[in-house]
Image 1: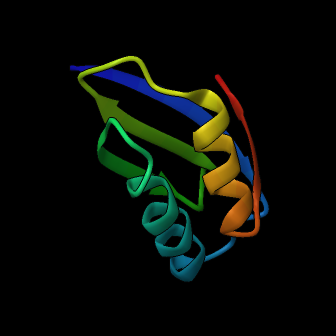
Image 2 (image 1 turned 135 degrees about the horizontal axis):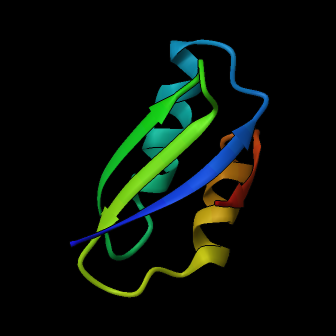
Length: 69
């Protein structure tokens, strides 16, 4: 299993973390998601190649922006 990291901007609270987690969890291939509003870090686990565009779109759908680290 591989871990992929993204830096998310704009998150300030647990609600932000849940919104990003909910959206990113729906991306095909994502098996686990860990989000920290404090650090702005989004980590996801996957057993396959992940579509960065789909992850970034999911973060945007939650109301935030991100870049892959």
